[in-house]
Image 1 (tube, rainbow, N blue to C red):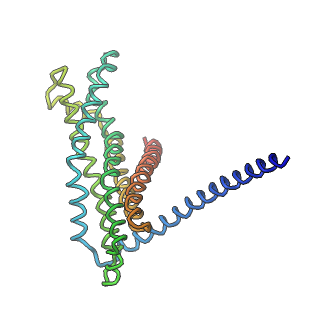
Image 2: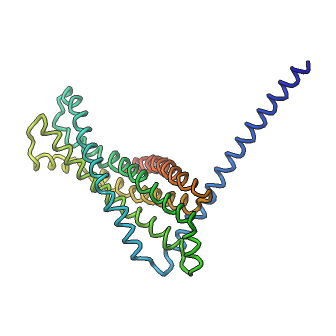
Image 3: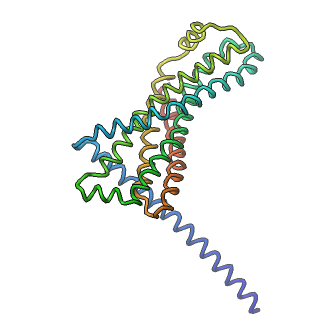
Length: 273
């Protein structure tokens, strides 16, 4: 009887521990959402108040945009090449091979290009911002800026979020163009289509809803990447261990937000189509 009572007590204790962990996990999620909301509101308050750090903003645009071009270009080229090669056999089965350029263009411009490019930037730019700001917090550079009379939030956070917000659409356009170029080369692997004919078929099938809404949502993708990266890095408080944790969580959360924003954008776009 004593052993039975002991085992029942242990099971009860295990259930209490698991229940406490669940409650703490839910509480931490709500705390994180609250802190992120306050961080976002602080960003908008500092965004429209002078002084404006234009030099730092241009520097961050260069880092986020120009230095990401090679990775984005290679990814876009492979994306267009592979999508075209994989789609050709299916279209040939139905005798619709002539629709290949238009189908690939709509797929890349409307969905694949913006999402894949945003995920690439979340991994490269988001992790970089998170690690950079976390290391600045660990080495007390942010505290030193506050002591010297500089607003670290405006200088560090606002410039990076604005840079990612406006540079990601540029990167998406660049990726789409390179992706269509890769598609053109893939079409000519097994055929002979002129450059002018290929792109005339593409533009003949594209309309307003194929171009503008996907471009608009990339601004929100960029904002999410910059916001999460800065939030995780700026609020890092675990010493050197927090640098890696901030970079990792910045990538994971921003990637999740990209899919959530994309899902919402698709639903909103479908209401007007």
